[in-house]
Image (cartoon, rainbow, N blue to C red; front, side, top):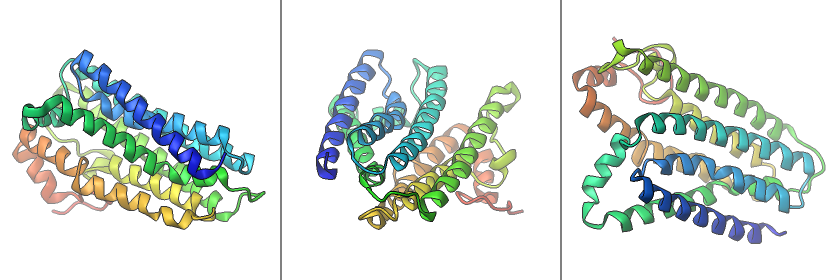
Length: 261
């Protein structure tokens, strides 16, 4: 199947899945599950591309394994966090409920669909790799896979460190400053971004692969300007006050670096 046809099919799949998840969110009264859905939807997308494209089979298998491993790990992690709070929504979505109260369901439906569209657009590097017929893996693909391993390990370590901190009753109302969180306020976001850099590097040698530079750039924009760091830190200041303000003053926002005194 051709690349454009596969993309249209993937776009329709993402939209349908996010519509179904929106219906579930209404039933359980918890819009937080959109985070789980966004992470998980990349698995059916990449499996669709790998199954129907006609590119080099080892390349299709490798990118499908990379994306599936990242997607399901993140969905599992978010699912565990959200289920521990349910039926209470995460603070970001409680705030959106207040802001969108006048047109709540319509705005959240569009929000869910926007997440599906974003997922489809971000899946294009996987699609280009899957349709690439070159009969060998090159240095860019090997480098991309190696960077992916580092990034995925860093993200998993950061998530585990934060989960362990939160599980300690003595941590209530305090900010995690141990492990990777001593060097970055958002090490999970930093390594998440590196995952997308790895996908870009992997797709680079495929036809039109260099154009997918927009993926890590778009992720960086969303992390810094939309639903990542701004909303997370607003909620952290609301819940932890001066303790978090001091953390902001002394600790790098994104790239891990030595804390300021």
